Image (cartoon, rainbow, N blue to C red; front, side, top):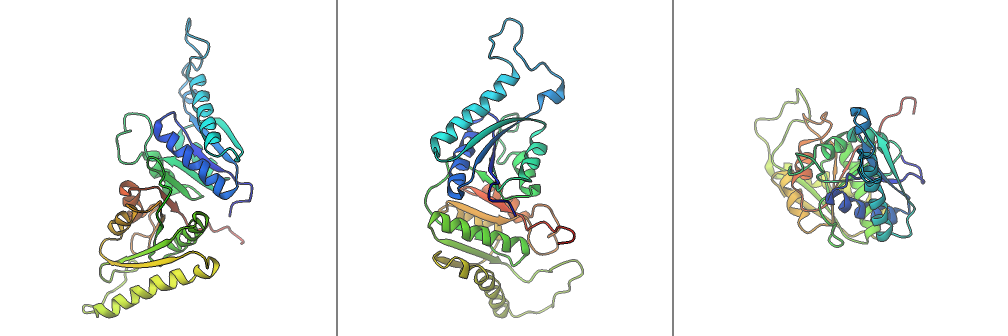
Length: 297
């Protein structure tokens, strides 16, 4: 659990995608009444290349000055979006995944653009965003373009601990944004809960559907009393869970998923549904991991 002073942290690299993330992060910090920290991961000192201006170049040239300008521009943009938020910036030595993972340990929320600079900028989702969504110790918001200001908050429900954390986060977001929460639970057919689980050869499809309806209702009921003013729509869909969430993302301002789901692949750092939603959703996506277990707690 993050402290009340834990900042919203946003990573920047000078790209337009990063500036979209900065604007979203400023709004998130304002929603939460938290400070905003803008961070640029500066890998070049590790590569032992010259950081200052080349001989005869302007005094403000060079990699170090460029990095500081990235941060200064982002801080200025964030202040313009949310002048009431305290905004600070830092150039931190290291590769982006390692730097941002360390920042996440003290953050309330980590905000990233969906793609960055470099030869792989054309991918649907940057490798740094995928790594951090899988491993960060705080929720990770991946921004796609300008964040939508209307529409519901959508959350994926599957009955797992990670899903429960995602539902709680989604309720809080819907309350902050004064909007509807759409809880989506998708099913195909009975699936093994884990290795060695044996399924019956014949099963009652109607009874199974009723069980899945109960999974959705129970998951929502756990959080609804804490947020009585949030309108909730429960959506049970037969089909691919990733496809159902991507379809709902078209009209949503935010989609929230757990980092891992239930079933035989629950041990993966980032589940297949979360991975697919990150790559294909039409709006911003938050990945929420279940709380870390602390020895002796």
